[in-house]
Length: 152
Image (cartoon, rainbow, N blue to C red; front, top):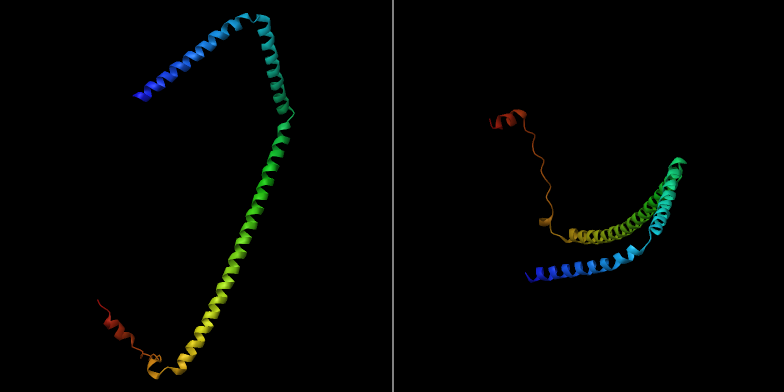
């Protein structure tokens, strides 16, 4: 409620200040002659007329085509530069990834060679009970036995 009252007071005071400024300016505007107002309007309309004539000649002489071509060329050039920058960043990222990958592969090879050396030592020193037994080959079964065993 208090905020609403403060906002109302600010609004009314600003409205009063604007009304005072306008009321002070009206007598000064009344002293300006009609000829001065007409001359100012004529000068402003001539500026507007020149602006409109420039726009008409811009389209009649088809100067806009040259302007559009220049704008299109600048846009394509900036797009080309952007693509080159993106390409450079991608190649640097790929080089970094390849360098990391090569290092990890070398580390894995070293670790595998160490494991192979350890496993060779273990194979030599391990007893027969720890060795992997060969898988026996099953005898071939006849097809009719397989068909009979199927649930119906």
